[in-house]
Image (cartoon, rainbow, N blue to C red; front, side):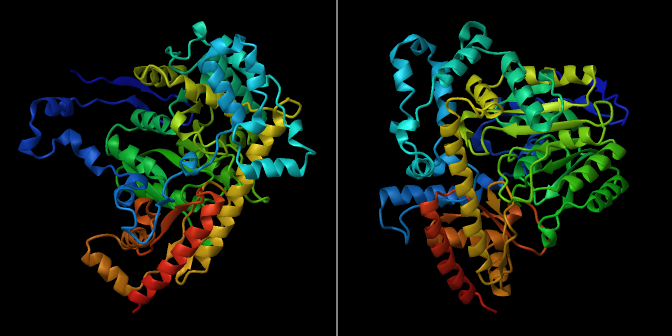
Length: 546
């Protein structure tokens, strides 16, 4: 199998100099087909990027938690807790969050369109008060309505399903689609982006993907030629970025968020790291910005975003905007603004700056992680480069159709005046209001622990507290040949069943220690998280007090 190269470079006025494809190694496949696992030879060079790749949110602590869960099933009472409380990953429905009814109704109808013609369908899809909505959402709705008899959605789920099916060739959700995604669904998403931002969006800029992660991998594959290519990433960062950069053979260039200012992103820090990178002979290619932040939960101010846009424009860097938590903003003084909106409001168009924004159906209030839906909006690239992006997308044929449909629903939910709007809004508001309360409860709990400080959760789904560990605990961790925050999280899990992710998996300023906690356990589980954590922490600090 030969290697493939594309010779097209970005020709925008910022001289991004983006090589779009690089050689693909084939030695790994030959190795796997010709070598017995019993021989245990040294890893071939083609495996080096895999060995460098780590993904902390499903790392050692989670593996241990899964083993403990199996023990609890096979040997009840074998541990000082009766359940594992997973606070390690943004997977809302696994922790009891209910899907949005309108979205699931449309999906069900699209996947089984023959029932659209049945007379019983109208009655079936008009009984939302009987289909198991969380009781707190029903209570919230009843507070402002005389009776649940008012909660009778119309046939707009049926109507939307027909609209979507008419956009799918053959009305077949089990068939392949265009490699960028179904055109009608991209039209809907582009219209949703335009309504959100107030600036035009082109459906041809939309690439539908199986969640945001494949889109990130695709861009890293396109951008990185060798270890001499650098991607600027925030520290702390979501491990997807460090893992993807490692897999594709590039260099992660860290820029540090300022914990003292609520995880602020300073343009001066970007400039400092850029200069340092160039002095080492590394070519900077792009800047990753996660807004709202993961794992840090901050929401960028619009003025701050303008500074970042200006920096990328002046330096000819592609802006990779992770915006998957755009619905998760919990403070009234902050609002989400897409980076494309900010750039357009500054007067910068397609020829001025290249921006790739990522969105997913896994986060927000919808939490449809397992449906694997998402997209990237690619702007500021010429037709030659767009052709190469499409080439890479087409290698995967297309993203799954259910995820595509969900992405269109997320960007075009029921609106005021639609017959199902009130029930939809009750579910959405119930979820987001609950997340806000959970974030505040956990934030307060962390700040009440000895040696722990936690910034306010302005958005996203996580808290990232800083923990000042006693020297004896640090030495014990060294003796156990593990990072101090990993040592703490492992002890916490074994004592309480609570699963946190060590901060070392996200990156942190050397000498500081953190852990990431999701705010996703259901509200009735939060008191157990707080009480177990508080009791454990007191015991831990006493055991290792200097």
